Length: 328
Ligand code: FES
Image 1 (cartoon, rainbow, N blue to C red):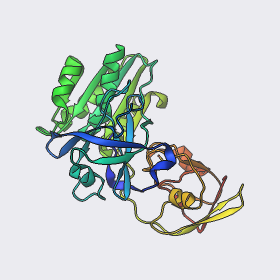
Image 2: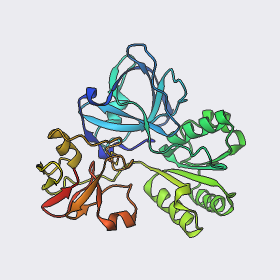
Image 3: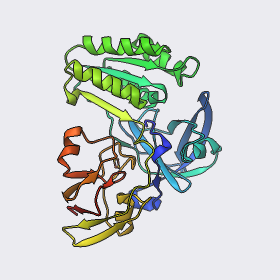
């Protein structure tokens, strides 16, 4: 996430269960006030997996796990770099990262992407707000590498922009900096209205920005398949009511206590469900629902998909009733 915010951290898992990586911190610096960039290499000195732009790294932060956008090159990377905004009132992920020291070793999953650029796009319109610049840095880097056309609109508070020097060097006049929110929104609106045919929109930033951009894109008739978003995470979630997940195919029943995610409860019973962000953002952990009413708390499903009620993002969503029947 992208920097995905640590506001919806997930319980940790054993690092061995996903081909995990062991990484060593080699560099730390302040990318902007309150934003720390951390560079890792493989702890054993070996090669690191490559990744497309927009990928993130799920880092084990003490007893929690959190996803952060990779900002560096993804082709044969010699290191991984993330930039993390310190959230003093968060659940600890950013504080963990801000406490790291050079030489520390951490566990992480292999990079995954739910926000990759579309290679057939005729132009890429990148819109970033605040720390939402992190996935856009890798998008811009890849667009430059492959000669793809792009425009990057970067809204930030004056004096608080991360990676500005690097972005200016990388993007030249394809970067537009907007410290004034109203001017930023007006420029986004204009860019959406005048985008050439075949342009894909990518947007990452705070929820109000995403909502405003998506609303404007919809008003202007942008096809949903040309609109790509990376939200920070599902909002702070309450622990929820306990319920029982009935696994129809296998005949099992899994109790999901308050404060434990459906995904974690399933994993606790040995039921493996593909997952990535564990924050309701990526769509990887979608499970078909056969009966019962899901309590959707993710940021992935569309309104129509929510209304259909036939699937649930089990990392954050729950059940409105005592039982949810799953096609598992
Ligand atoms: S793991 Fe990403 S939405 Fe659940």
